[in-house]
Image 1 (cartoon, rainbow, N blue to C red):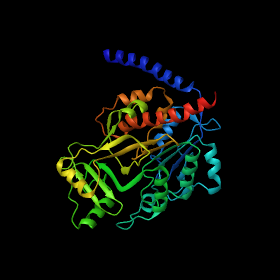
Image 2: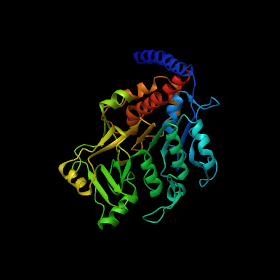
Image 3: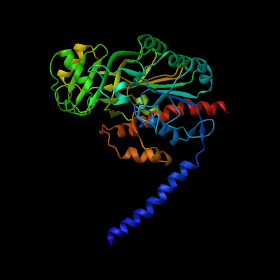
Image 4: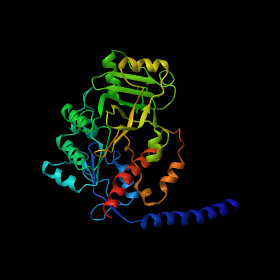
Amino acid sequence: MKGVNVFKVLFFILIPVIVASFVFWYIQNDREYNVFVLDKTVPNDSYSEHKSLFWLLNYHKIVNKAHKSYSYKNDYYGFHPVEGEDNASYNIKSLRLYEIFGIADDLDFMYYTDSYGVSYEDWFRRPADRFHSPLIYGGLNQNDYLLLNEMRRKNKLIISEFNMLGSPTSELIRNKTENLFDFYWTGWTGSYFKSLQSTSTSIPRLIIDLYEKKYLKKWAFDGSGVVLIHEKGNIVVLQNGIHLTAEYPQIVTSAYGQYKYKLPDSQNYSFWFDIISAGTVNKVVSKYHLPLSVAGSEMLKKEGIPTEFPAVIEHLDKYKFYYLAGDFSDLSINQYSSYFKGFPWLAKSLYLKRSGSKKAFFWRFYEPLINNIIEKNVVVKKHNNSK
């Protein structure tokens, strides 16, 4: 009987709270912003590389010119799976040269979520040759670069993230983009893996094959760890307990970043990142810290890899530019929760600081970062211009 009473009490408390949460979201005014999203890495219908961004757009009632919510299935440029047909069907929505200046005029901000692309193996689910999977589509191209250049010239907000500079982007386009924003890729890319065992599904077979080809010995790692890969083929494997003194890489945020973007002082990070140099005009908001042992430090020193490197950089002087040096927006989040005011506060409270999950990273780091970037660079600007 007691259990029934408790259930009834919880029911009559929660239902009004949920209804009120939806009502508060619904009665907010729409915020009309013209947003450009580029995602070339959509190998299935999960849309995970940009879905979390669209969650944020909907939660904050950011709508298009027709006052319709942005659709994560349709409202982006890049690789589009064709749903409801055979598994091999896809469309590609690309920037055309004649569109660039008009698009830049109309945009409030742009976001390049992932330029890596889709490979033959990703799309057709068939094994490629042992060391290479042909690319169907991907890499930053000349038109993508020209839009960046035009947005920079017009002082419009630009947000971009890993993988914008690495393969399969050509060296020419990479160098032009680096020079445009004065930040530079070192050639190194890395990721945390929960299990380094060769039988684990979490670690790509390609990494194991490249290691064995490079060093002519069997992959014999276990436990968790971080793998660093250079574009020229060098591989560094850092095992937890041997080369690492803690489970996860950390993102450490400056006092400036904590105050301005409401970020935690540190956050565990457990997926892909690239190692960049911030140049001379960019401000480092957050940086990666690898918890290295003496043995780990020696391995990185031998390869010329820094133990700390930028995670988030910004330039807000002559133009508005952010680069997020990781796969930050990669989360296939349920869109229904974006219709409830206050949900981020609830979700954030469920994840401890030490958690290394993608959801913990989204709620504790990505959500406040992107929300505050948009608020401070788009919302405030529009408000001032309307006076």
